[in-house]
Amino acid sequence: MSAISHDGVAVLRKSDLSKVPRPCRSDLDLIERVDQALDVLHGKWKVHLLFFMARGVRRHGRLLACLPGVSKKVMTDTLRALERDGLVARRIFAEVPVRVEYSLTPLGWTITEPLIALSEWGEIHSREVTEARAQYRNDTSSLGGPRITQRSAAA
Image (cartoon, rainbow, N blue to C red):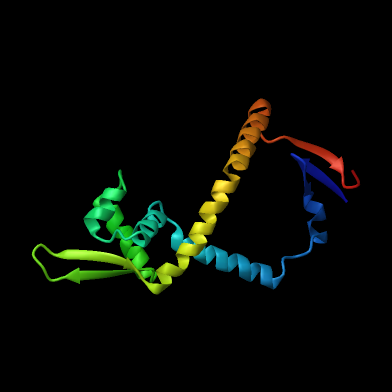
């Protein structure tokens, strides 16, 4: 079996793909659950809003002030999506003018711990990611694309 090396990572030829073990059901289930979780958080402002609400910011106007550059419509749509997914509750007060407050639901609170863990991972590994990106840019810009070399699997 021979392989193509891409920056030190062996990549199998198409003819060798039949010899590669298929992903097991538990791996596919795990990937699907991660995709579902990421889908809930997908969007430019969702994570921001979750953090601000966890810190106590709840009024629509105050949330909007925390997100410079976002339109009122985009923020409202984002809040509605979080409400749809069960992470945020909306409470309307019968006052003049109408007062609306948003808060994290118990389900919304459960996502804060993984977000904090992800933030910590980013803090710990940001330098490595930055260096890897710079190395990749250097490797690809000097050759006009990713560097690919051919060598045997025994190598």
